[in-house]
Length: 533
Image (cartoon, rainbow, N blue to C red; front, top):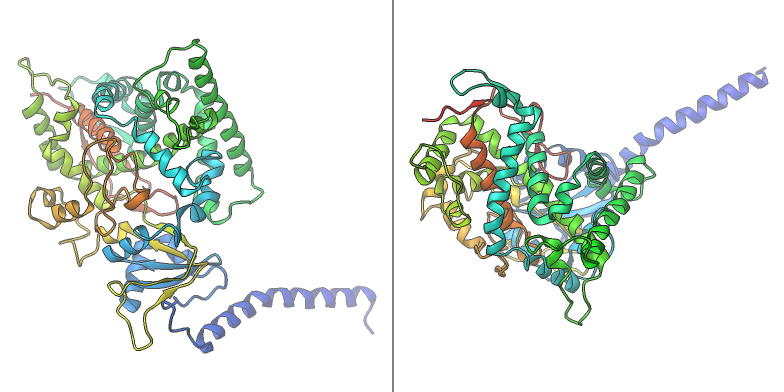
């Protein structure tokens, strides 16, 4: 006869056994459902997955491009996978880019896909927290500050910031202490250095002198806490009760107050306005209905410019430095280009002006090729508001008709996939800047189809069917594209003038566990002070 204690232990064992078997039961039922349930032939094929709710999230999250190529081999350019309960329909290639990024806003919504991620970081009433027509007006407000005149002023500012950083930061102690004739090498972390340079140069130019002078430890901590709320987990699970979420919200409030204080001091005359920075530009903008841009919206747009621009430029710049370190012959050609165009009579190099910087073919090719192989964002999503048919150019109709992506799904385009698609690019995975030198080659054809335009502040056409989209396409194309080229070009040119670089390890792999595809560690670069001719 069992005692009370024995009976309780037996029940506990039974409950434990039952609970432990539930996950296995859920997986079994999920597999059986996929195997025996008749497929709706009007829907794109769905990727088989073992774990319910999680779906293909692990495989996609670890290496999305590898995952896309694997699925394409079996299903073609359009298929659906499960991502933590979301049904995501992927459309690959240039046609897929056009389907997703060129779709009508009434059917495909960016704000429905991203507002839960961006609003807590950027703030209310801007970007994806407003109707699309308001967001388009806000983009025009920012474009009003991206003028050729401003860019001309920015080149010298950026060059000064990079030079001062290399003269003072501990990452460049060997550069600071060793004469050029001494063959000593130092090391720096490519991504950490570029992250610091990017925020310094962006704050000196777009953000304004008050922001630049306010880059103390307090601001750095606020930025770090806000940045902690801009990660894949925040996109997938927007309302978790985590400390990082609380820090994000606190930092957003404090940074808003920081910008509002600058705006108030300028309006009351305590601090003079600066015609070259974005704060001054935004404070003078009005919506089409006559409303002036409220101060809190100016502050939140400034936060958006700082956060979004810093991530992408820092990551892109680190990839460029790593590629140059791994290919010293290309770095040397880049340096000789500087010598050819900017040499003074005494052998020193003068500062370039904006128009000269744009006209350097090797520099342009190095940046474009790095952005092709290492675009900042691998996936772009839209939320499906209404059933949409899949174009026949993307998926040929079968005897059952054309595919339809249903309301409630997400659709996904991958410019990162199309930029290494072997159907378009020769030696697609090879980093080869020379491909951009061929005026009639595939790279230039892709560039022309993207219809970038090079006039700051002017509109660009959609370019949604281009296989080359490092800055996106369509109405949501990155408005900071031209500034990014200017910033990257000036930073890279200044560094190459001062140091020679080598890569002491194998080339870093992609870290796909961040929203922006950054280089994995180790990402150290060996350097020595350049020996001037």
